[in-house]
Length: 279
Image 1 (cartoon, one colour):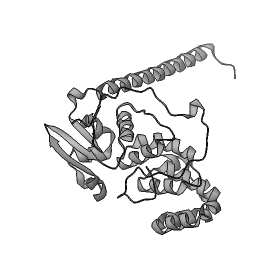
Image 2 (image 1 turned 120 degrees about the horizontal axis):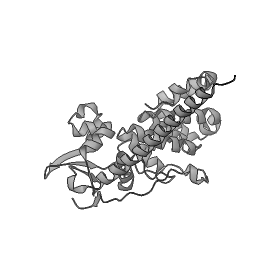
Image 3 (image 1 turned 45 degrees about the horizontal axis):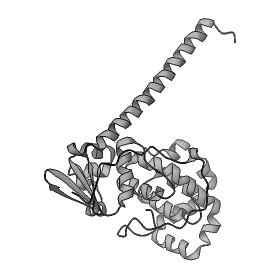
Image 4 (image 1 turned 135 degrees about the vertical axis):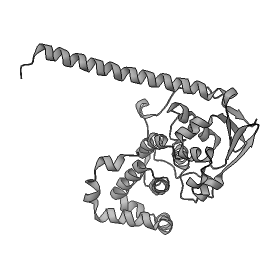
């Protein structure tokens, strides 16, 4: 999970407790649970009437096309959920702290820039830490990627998201998924988790979230954290030991925060497309 610890420590470190919040069903990111057969465990004016009718027909056609597109995407997601559990045609295994998960190289490469670099042998695209954390070996014609920095339950949801563009997302796993989205460079998961986590920002976790947002280039979370900091700077900086530790390790981030404190109006007037675009 995101924390102020360095990357040599386990990503399961706990953030400070969240403030107590109650979410309506609409605020929870939930999805029906697909089968998890892929988890192998420890086994290997006056209008013209004609114009009105024409515009109405055009609108209906566009509306129908939109509905059809949405339905086709649902079918695609369902089909990939079925593919996920076709372990008989899997050509890759993820060894996640001793739990093996059967996956398909083409899906991982298409959805994750990090896995794409590993699978295609372009490891020079990755930083040294990432390369060291993803060890590979080929056994029985299958690529085995060893992952130690992500909890198996989190990785299971990451894989489900890679195949279906949805997963279980709640307060318990949101930070772990956000960390994984950055660690494996999965842009759509950055957006999916970032929007949810942004609603949970508080005085206790804003610095840890901000540090992770900078590390993994999550624009949305970074922006929301800065917004929160500008509104609560005195409270956050009053936490002497926490703030001083953060400032010592993140001089560049602190410099930007101080800049925006002085230039708050400029920050508020920034183009929303520039601010929130993750792509």
